[in-house]
Amino acid sequence: MSSSVPDAPDPRLTAEPPLRQFTEEARRPKGIEWYRSPLPPGAMKSLHVRSNLRGAAQTLGYLAILAAPAGLAIRAGLAHAWGWAALGVFFYGVIAAFLINGVHELGHNTVFRSAWLNRWFCRLLAFLGWINHEVFETSHVRHHRYTLHPPDDDENPLPIRFTAQDFFKGCVFHYGFFVYAIRKMVRLARGRFEGTWEQTLFPADQPAIARPAVLWARVVLAGHLAILIVSVIKGWWIVPVLISAGPFFGNGLFLLCNNTQHIALPAHNTDFRLCCRTFTLNPFVQFLYWHMNFHTEHHMYAAVPCYRLGKLHRLIRHDLPPTPHGILAVWRDIAAVVRRQQAEPGWVFQPVLPSTTRSASA
Image (cartoon, rainbow, N blue to C red; front, side, top):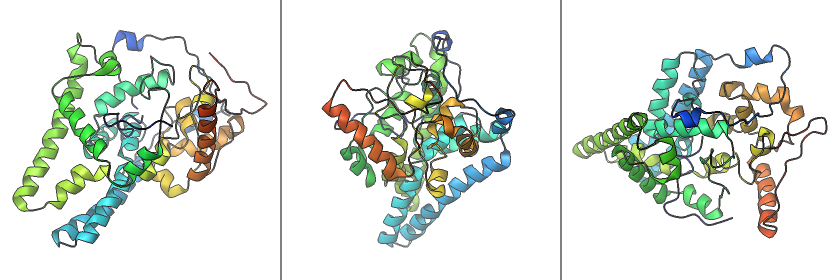
């Protein structure tokens, strides 16, 4: 595995949804016909049902879990109980790291039946996580359509890297991620799109496409600046530490979950079972992760709400590669693949498919 670089994109800001229109070139079909595991009769309709009640359980439940360490940190900070305040900020970061997964799911417009609820909570989570959901959504359309087919999908530049150094930095406080997030938001607020991928998504000759992303960047910066000013005036130093810097503490659990999605898997094929990875988790972590451990299923049927992906998995698991159970098991498998790829640079890993099915390859 390679070492990280200081200015590398924050993996939380490039993690993954939403289905926005952008340019004619981006909308033009490229002829990829993806293999999708067949579903039993009638299952398709029931799996795609969105529910405001279940959406609220997922979204408000996640926010309630996030609020618990936030409350501890603020109360302890105002009482000058530094140890408890630090503990609260750390565990706030553990939970807040998964904000990107909530933005991802809400951006798909599948969590709630009511579209306005998806939009409202998407913006709330994006603000808390320093995420420009407009940029993310535009990028993520292509990621789903052309998964691991560069240059049409460059959301996760290949080869995907994740190092022990990346992990241990994220476990405590990743200053580099924090600075990168602020700098990127300032740059976007100024209407500056850099790099081949951003400039492809937001062409300089079509400023109307970029306007929502620019405006959102300004909202995020103005909001966090207002929090800082009010907190300084009131002497509430713990509030900006928690709200603005908190998401960059304690990201280890998130990094172990989110970096499993496509790492070490082969590119340029037409079978989601080969370029996406599914593994199972304990119910609590799966809830925090917005059920994205069922990543193959999510790519196969992106309109299925996250809280129904477990059911989808049970319906098609006979057609999937072996599914590791737990974080340790999945990373044991990934590490074995990465070690062989390092020893044999030309070797391409091919997940084992059930003998009853055949992969479609490009």
